[in-house]
Amino acid sequence: MSQYQTELWKDVTSPLRTRYSCAYDYGADYVLQFPVERANFLSRGTFKLAPDHRMFVEVLGSRTKATAILTPMQVQTSIANKAVYPVGGAYYQDLSAYIPSFDNTKPIAYKWRANDVGNRTQENTTDNARVLLGFEGNFGKWDYKTGVSYAQSTTKTKLTDGYSYTDKLYAALGTGIINPWIGAGQSQTDAAKQLIESTKFRGAFQHGKTTLTQIDGSVSGELFQLPAGAVAMAAGFDLRREGYSFGQDVDANLILLAPGNAALKDVSRNVKAVYAELLVPIMKDLEMQLAVRRDDYSQVGATTNPKIALRYQPADFVLFRASASKGFLAPSFDQLYSGVLTQELPNGSKDPEGCARNPGVAEYCSIPRLIYTTGGNLNLKPETSKQGSVGIVIEPVKGYSASFDYWAINTQDQLLKRTPQVVLANYQALNQYIFRKADGTIDYVQAGWFNAGGSRVRGLDVSLRGEGKVQDAKWTATLDGTYMDSFKFAEYKGQEYKELVGNFYTRDLYLRWKHNASFGVSRGDWSGLLIQSFASGYKDQVPNDGKGTPPPGFKSDVSSYTTYNLSGSYTGFKNTTITVGIQNLFDRDPPFTAHNVDEVVGAGWDPRVADPRGRAFTFQLKYKFL
Image (cartoon, rainbow, N blue to C red; front, side):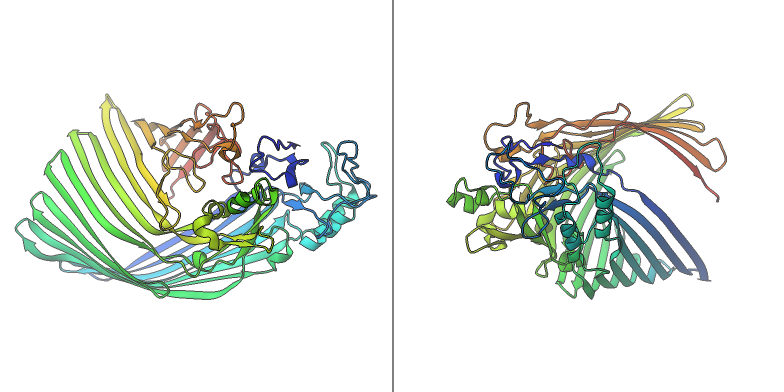
């Protein structure tokens, strides 16, 4: 803890709450890698029914148990919730000597990082199962495959520590027995520890289930002959019934800051799809692919999406390819039906409309606590897209090849989760999502799933390959990279598209260039591999909402990030592979970024680009029984 620098962040932090507060770098307390246990089972049997016909059965099962560990909850006390520290309590803080206006005849309202309650810990257990019965075979030149399957996934969540019943915790804090200002090296009294423990909730919290019943089939073969070759065709169908349910084992509203959701009884939808593809040899070196697919969702309607692709290879060392298609993405059950949650932003948000009318008033210009709602949206429309690409593959010398593919993707009604910050920043167009009190201040902001205006994306994929041999040692070298030419995004229809490549953005980072390069050597039972990962730099988020002069030492550019991984393997023992490795060989630190950790996690670093764990050593032993 340290004193909060109100003046440094004066335009984005409410003086109503933080003038005399402490700062807590909760980003430093994040658990970077949750403990996970996994068990998987797969069984497949094939039965020959006739010389050209087979039946097969697949059974899959898995269990994943993950423990999510979050920072201790933040508690805000007030006269209304009766959790203020009482006058006469053993730990009452008389601040009259420091704050002339302090009234030591009144209780103290404070904000408390509840370290003594413990890290918020959740145990999530997910069980997956799938059974498939299928048939496959051929009739002459025609192949067929069909099957029926059922799958389900269930998840159960337990809260194991760090959560308290709201009323019990507030009442306990109001007794004065708990010391909210405990210093370093000190601990709560036994009476305080017992009181804290009595407020906790532990046990089953919520559960969810998804189901999928599916019947599908396909057939493929040759239709007829053209001068350049046979016209091949494939067609198929897909019938699905998808189900979803979610329930609570306890009312989440009774538990402070519980990660709950509103219960939802069983909902389901039917999905029907048919598709067909043609492969047409136009000339000896030129072929065309034509495809069409029609999907019909019982909730959101039907859509037909075509595709055309061309492949031209005039010589052995060069290949040209191109394609164009349309796409369709239906909203998920979670996006449609997830329950409404009430949350808050504690970082002093600004009401642009209210602040313009009431300049300098903190309740408008630096809101102490912004309430917002988030959840599903029954009015969501499907996301649609149009995409295309053109490319070339060349192999001027055997063993050395390169490919370049330029692509473009345009989306409309993109399915995204809107934040309250975005609603406020676009209040002119999204004012219907801002709800106000009688005095004009914001009551709450409606966020959650929505259909964005869309995006326009352009880029170039590059792939280089090389291999050779030096005496009895073989080597390979590769590079796979993407150059992002443009990523323009519109939050809502009618908004001007904004370029995001190379700039900080809360939803994602669109870097100008990223690549993975590798160099491998093998000789007999030994092999080694060196991998380089590179991500280009970008413009950082400007502190204090870009107002005034940035803090001393602030750099507007986040530097590029390069790491190397080295590994070696030995296969000299029967059925055994031994691999040792070093991740982040040169112990590279993530590039520094000054972004607001309330909007993107990672204090001083960005997890979307970098890994702060430094150099790590790995060991893997693999043994095959069959």
